[in-house]
Image 1 (cartoon, rainbow, N blue to C red):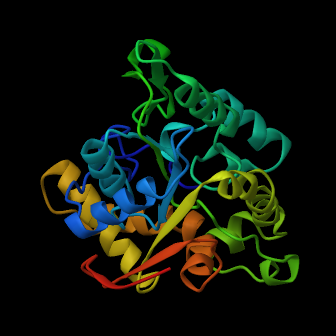
Image 2 (image 1 turned 180 degrees about the horizontal axis):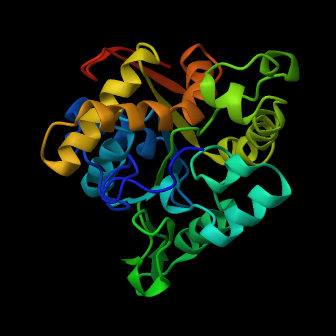
Length: 284
């Protein structure tokens, strides 16, 4: 099973919740988000989703756009189920649900409550934005959540699986990697993940006013991007052992990431990236 820790304590992960390891966002992509905000509804904050594989720069883009346009940024990574809730899922459905990341491990009701509160907020109202403590692998205490005052110009949600299209059962039969072969030989976990993808996660994607997908050139770059994140976080190069841990960890994301890169994603705007995260084309 993938190590449910990392970043600082043995699990490959991003910096503390809401603080991406890669912080640069291209001004043209920030302007793209600004255009989607301007084209959104006027009677409430537009709800914009930004999806992309690990290391694609989606959180950095969402944070930069939020700062530029008076919006609020929420990472799907900050709305995970608590550790106890995921452990209960692991006992009920499959042991791999103890590890946060894939569809099914997020608290979408918490996300919905937060969006509703922000959308209805008055000038003096304060909405706490959920935070997840990746060091303890659990939701941070609410007193540690960052408060957002007033009503935002837009609500920007970034998440690696936003807009993903569920795969049919037939495509899930054959294991894709060692994790699926050794820990999900009967495909119970991947079928459950696909069920969540086509259920509550699809409903979330359909609620978005606009969906942007940062499309990696292929899954083979994700390991490099993920390792670059970790090296930025740690301030040093990774050892081969550390890189191997990350390679093991991203196997849980591989199937759906490949599917999204190959077109299995609902998106209004697709930004094709090269291996250096530079936009190659932007299509709507």
